Length: 191
Image 1: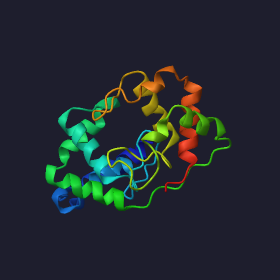
Image 2 (image 1 turned 60 degrees about the vertical axis):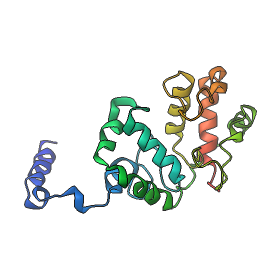
Image 3 (image 1 turned 90 degrees about the vertical axis):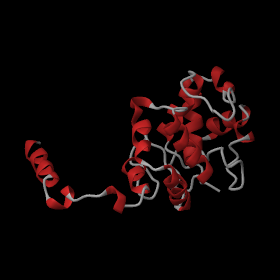
Image 4 (image 1 turned 45 degrees about the vertical axis):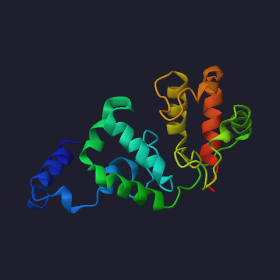
């Protein structure tokens, strides 16, 4: 372990890294550290952005940048300050132009599908490419990320600034149902 840490520190001291100029790289590479270069993140903590609606991505980046949205640990609030305002549409278009991630396999999605329908979620999250540009695609998203966001909406740790209270149907939903909805959405291919 110590040898790896030493090797990493030695790499930082190389002239190539010392000469690093972030202005010489596309702005979306800043986001790629967590969300993947092509919009598929490597962990359930960060959402997939590949194939997401560009207006939604841009609105979320601006919400973090303007302090209207926060996240655990404040990573996004910190990192979006590295983007210039004029770069945000470019970043959003980059990730939106990437392929949507492949669906995540799930054994049984019937309960999640029925709960999604019963709660009326499809009224906004309809998976149609020409749907409301400010409503995100939820299909082919990381299940852990979807669960966390639904729990945050239910526990009033997150709100939709453009439509406050819109997720009130989640208030009566138990954790198991949220997990089932997340598994269903993650297993569905994006239209």
